[in-house]
Length: 343
Image (cartoon, rainbow, N blue to C red; front, side, top):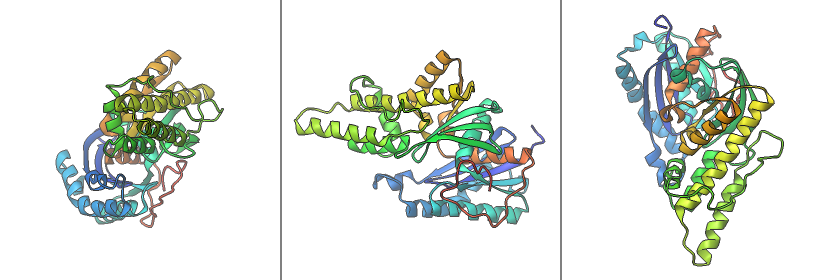
C-alpha cells in the first residue's frame, strides 16, 4: 500500500510514551520511552510521575520515530492518539500533543480507543483481521472479551473483569513473592523452573455461564497460601507458586475465550494486551485452539505492550474507512468504553 497515507500514532495511556508510524498495515517506526523504572520503587504506576515523564519524553520520542522511519514532519498525513481509557493526566499529555501536531501540520486528527488499538495492531504483523473475530485483551488494567465485526467501528463487549484484571493480579502476586515490578515478566520467568500443577489454586468464574473474569480471589488465595507456609516455618518454593498461579490465570483466560468462540460461532481468536506476551498463555491458547479448530493470532511481544504502533494502525484503519476526523476539542476520557472506537 505505497499510496496509503502516513499515520503517526501517539500512545500515553499509562507509563509508556509510544510513537508509531505506519503506512497502511506496514510498520515504519515504533519508538517507546518508558518511565517504568521511575515507578518500580513504588510497586506500581504513580499517575503524576507518569504524566511528567510523558511531558519530558514526547518531543524527543516523536523525533526519534521520524528519524527511524527516515521521514520529516511534512511527510505525515494524519495524527492518531489514544483518547482513552487510561490515566487521566497521562492521556491529557498525549491528546494535547496530538492536537498541536495536527494543527501545526494541517493534517486530520483521530482520537482512538486504547483497547481497540490493541486489536488493530495485530494487522501490522499478520495482515487484515478476519471479520468477525473474537478478541481477548489482557493487561494490567483490562481483561476483556470482545466480538469484533470491524475494528474501525464495530466492537461489542462480551465480558470483562469484575475485579482485578489479569495483569494487576500478576503484579500483586509478584509483590507477595518478592519479585520486582512489573510482575508479569518476572512470574513468567520464575514459572519456567516450577510446576503448574504443584498447587491447586482456584479458578474464578470459570463455569459460571458468563464471559466475565475474576482474579481477586485467586490473588488472595496465593497470598494466604504463602502466609500459611511462612507462619508454619516451611519454605516457599517461588517457582512452583509462580507456575501454579500463572496456570490458574491462563486456564481461565483460554477457557473463556473458547467459550466465546463457540457461543458466537467465530473461528478466529486474537489475543492482545501486555499479558499476551506471557509465554504460557501463548502456548496454552495455541494448544487449545488447535484442538477446537480455532485459528489464533497473537502479535509478537513488542506489539502486545502499550505502543504507538497500535494507535497508528487503528488510525490508518479509520482513514481507510473514510471516518470523519476528530475535532480539535476532543477530550481525554479515562473511562472511554470499548464500544467507542473513535471520538
